[in-house]
Amino acid sequence: MSVLVTGGAGYIGSHMVLRLLDAGERVVVVDNLVTGFDWAVDSRARLVTGDVGDMGLVGPLLREEEVSAILHFAGSVVVPESVADPLKYYRNNTANTRNLIEAAVEAGVGRFIFSSTAAVYGGAGMDPVFEDAELDPEAPYGRSKWMSEMMLADVGVAHGLRYGILRYFNVAGADPEGRAGQSTPRATHLIKIACQTALGLRPRMEVFGTDYPTPDGTAVRDYIHVTDLIEAHALMLDHLGAGGASDTLNCGYGRGYSVREVIETVREVSGVEFETVESPRRPGDPPSLVAGADRVRERLGWRPAHESLGEIVTTALAWEKHLMTRNDPPPIA
Image (cartoon, rainbow, N blue to C red):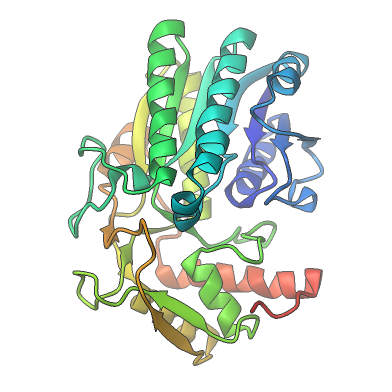
């Protein structure tokens, strides 16, 4: 038996692959390598290059590899891009997920863990948002993920597929052992951009929106270390494997930091006073998103080990330094 990781050559997926392999699982990865990297996939896993929505590829693969569980990370994740190109997001995040779910049902896969997002909540205000809050995504990105959540719930009822929906808040940081990290040069993650700027890979960084109804006017987010996030997936996989019920859980710490606070932390950790430029808000960005994170602790026994913003930044900065020697990147304009 094996576990399929879609998007396993990407940021979060590559960390999941490492966690599964370290636990002795047999792992197969499907990734089209549009934003992922073949070198990011640990050599102990099998990498198949292709689209997760290609049922002619995925269906036979599930049977050949005797896949018992799918962890689905593949998709597009840039909120402003989803506003400009919604059809791309409904294809990559919704239509492809629909095909993958059908392939899973036809192959008799029993467990399916879906990488969802706090963007399904829309602008939730300054208070933590819990799983039973009204869903009102503000951009096609969040709506494309919400549609996938609804499909999983319906298929769970109709076909008995047991699933875990994990709604991520802002994932950041890198593997503490330095084996994986966010490797896309032009990724839009705030902490990555700030670290790149501190290292001189960008001449300056933009602060999008300084007039939000937040304490310092900049957007507030709940930043979760990627290693803690992956542990929640591993616990969900075990939960479903032991016959546990399908569930939908927030993945965050329940503590928000503003853009200015993150920038100051990166400056402190790096020792560099890099330049910032204030710019207008980006379309689709809510003022604040902070997790109500009790349920994941109660139902899975999840205990985060890397909650410090300083530690998150330290591992992210270390990974950016690693990429500088590995890839010899040019400056990012």
